[in-house]
Image (cartoon, rainbow over all chains, first blue to last red; front, side, top):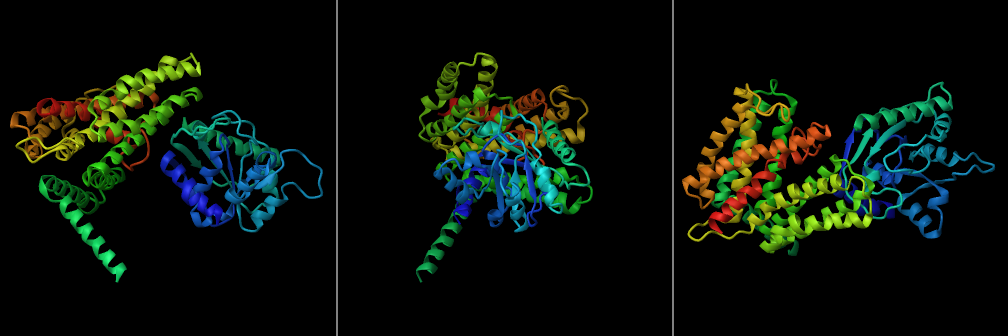
Length: 206
Length: 325
């Protein structure tokens, strides 16, 4: 409920009216089946922009995956991240534990949720892409029937770059690309293919 | 009982609003415009349905949105019009800032640029002419470089500050003349004031664009500025210039102008509209895009629609202001 109100009253009006989003390839995004959304990452806004692509009644079904060390840092941020955004916390460090680190993601997909992942692992420098990590490919191997939807985001890093608190409006570019399935290829090949597709969409943009 | 009477009052207010909107001199013009648009829609979607390109259809359909927004935004009342024109400035400026190359260190002055819109339209609404006319050309012009000094990035200082200031002049200062014109009172001895003048200017400016397109399509042979805008032709420009001058006289019942003044206004709007159009084309060529944005299907972005107004609004405003205020 809190999440619904937050998106209906604050996030969607800000993202869609004040900044403005230019979406291409909306037909590639199915909103009624679970999917793995994968995008390049430059700004905290990325998550909010991607979630605004979905209709409000689906918003509780969209779960962004976020770094536990940042979004669970203290109780206030943790409370906000879980109740207003609905993140699935993921540890960025390799830990020894009894369950697979991606298990909560698989469970969410199984339960019918869609998840948002940023394979760069960090926002990095504004409007620059760093190397993709292989988590998406591992997850795709675990859930081979769930489509991976690559999305290129441009401009969010100008609106709110890492380390800035002042929002400056620019129109944000969202380029939704064709869904990808992991075939017989290995983890490395799929990760490279994914990175290539998103990078290409970004270059075509400029 | 209570709900029913509120509803009744609401309906009554709505009917009254609509009748005031479409009565009087400006009402007649609005009805003519809507009539022409209905006719154009009929032609592209019924008579020549299969022959018309999708782009032209989108263009005609988008005109409904543009004209609808203009009538509701600018013609209902002066206060609403201030917010409406401020919003247009904001959208145009945002599209411009999205197009131009910007760096992280420019974000602050861009933020100030957005903020200046609020003041500019407040001065317009308050009819504070002195501040309205110097706020951007003087105060913002002096403030932005100072803010850049505080940030301390010397590389690209001139380019970036000029780019931001230029955008402010075009899309905030230039367009806000529409808002100030809106507040002008009726001229003694005439029953037409700011609202009618704004309608006159906007209708003629947009008709000029359409006429250039139509004349160019039918007779266009010689390119007028081939490097900047390959679709513009000498025939299109001359055809629109003559037709628009005639239309300016025909619509002069919206203004206090004599026939000669109306003729001059028509020539001014046609010439300036053309220049504004190709100046924005120049920006797009410089950056390397075809359309400035994607807000209006068939038209491109909002810059593609207000480009001519950035020139006609201040020039026509000062023409009228000099003659009558």
